[in-house]
Image 1 (cartoon, rainbow over the protein chains, first blue to last red):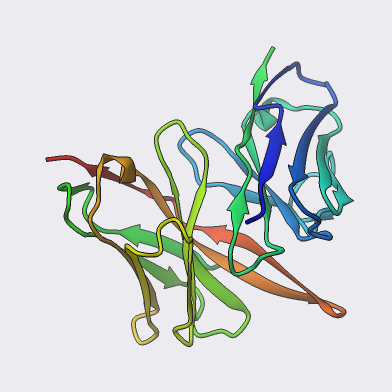
Image 2 (image 1 turned 30 degrees about the vertical axis):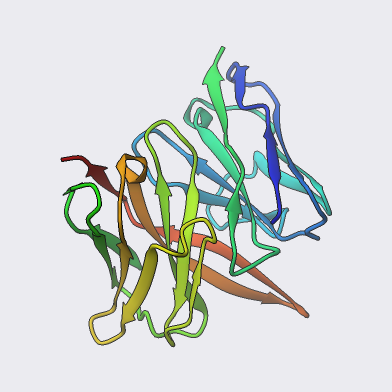
Length: 108
Length: 126
């Protein structure tokens, strides 16, 4: 079983801020990681896969980095529509899948 | 444009079986490039992968739910379904269906859930 630790669980930020969210694995997973954004009452949406590849249509202020056990999602200039909850997901053990616990980005 | 739509009862009694169907429109469920899966989210909590199925019928389940879960596919109807038996209040959640794309990059394969249904709320209560 691959354990995932996502931090922080809550992040307070202001529009225009640069924010980073961390996802740490209990074992190396190469770059088999995706990031999702979920807004209240909505289904999650794919932002990034393969740790750093931006999904089509996702704004370039979103970026992902890392490999092995440590990964980061960065939003370079937070916009009002970015206040949401973000999840990492590993698929190294595909077809077994695991999500991180989530990071809620709220308005400061 | 591919769309997924969950359907099924919104209320299930404890100890009974939860049954949901995901209808795929705008594309074929029989493509070799995708898996089809179920994910759930209890109120105020995070996402939990339940299981996935390939169009051939191969299934993969979360070990924590495996003894109670059955996922099946009906290619003639372009649908796949979830059955969760012996439900309790802990199974109350929003249930999502989603497509997992298989993307090849050299010798590596990447899997990501690129299309999701809107979700359906299932409450377990007598």
